[in-house]
Length: 108
Image (cartoon, rainbow, N blue to C red; front, side):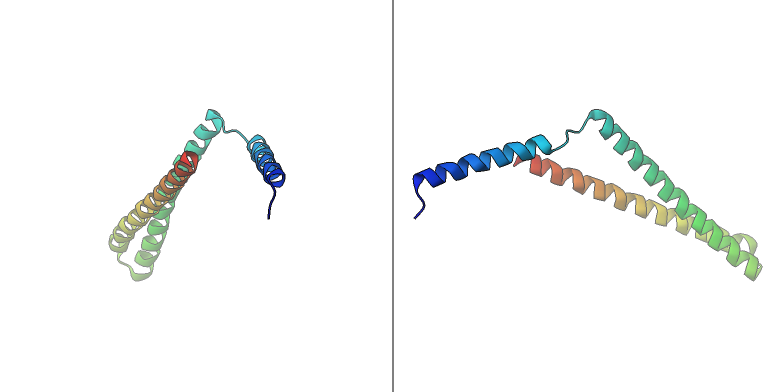
């Protein structure tokens, strides 16, 4: 059905397409990797601080409304810390999965 000449042309076309895709793909520099690591670190710090701040705000608000000053403040600060740590771990897991998939694609 398909002649040898057509097959050879298709193979040559495939090679040219692969070469064009490789040339168009931007190369990552080590500097970009260090920036992404710094961005990841700041993201995790911000997530932790945001959890603490939200816990502080909710606890202080409840203590002010109910007149029980340190009780809810302490409880919600710990709850905010736990939520911040959980969010940080989820972010780290996402980055790890992303790195693993890119490493697998590099092996293929």
